[in-house]
Length: 74
Image (cartoon, rainbow, N blue to C red; front, side, top):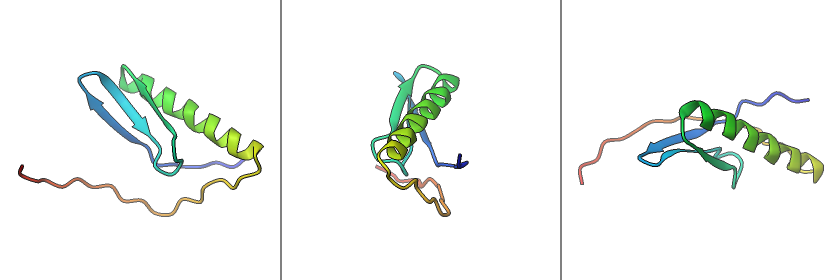
């Protein structure tokens, strides 16, 4: 079994939390709390990876990732 550290983006709005893994196209989930969204995205990632393994696909090789925010005036 290979240990992976994957980037996850978590966004919060008035309806709850939304999370996705940009390294795994289509891997996303939602939840009502931060704790729930962490559990949900871990489950979504595991299911995604299990499917890739079952289909003989390569697992992602993640390099360095940088996340920042910028301020704009609209």
